[in-house]
Length: 156
Image (cartoon, rainbow, N blue to C red):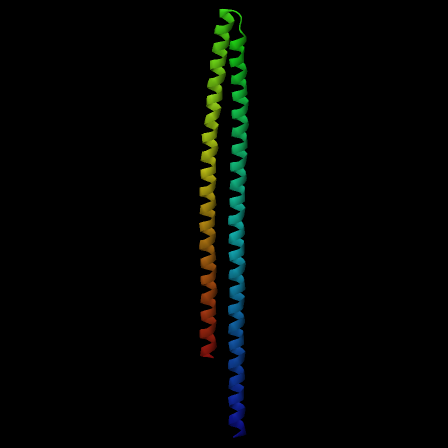
């Protein structure tokens, strides 16, 4: 009888040890998954920040170019009003037209900045989608490891 009780106790002890090992393996897999998810999210966040920074720089540059070109056009237009001879007025009008055309081209820089913003937002969305996919895969791997550990523990 003592031998039977000792054998049963030994079997229960072994089962408990294997169950703890399985739990430990599952915990390690979950920690690894959590780390991978955090890294994927950090990478996505960095991409988003870079994209927003690039878009802001493009916007600032476009704004500066527009303001400068419009100021030049305004100066040339003022020269038309100050002209005292028909020749000066004609030359000033031509210069003003050129300056305004240049300013209009600079306004197209705004379109480029807007496109840059859209591209940056798209890049950020792609980075987030990739991060989400990596997080799902990491969690799936952790779940599989936990299930495998439970199966191994049940077999022993």
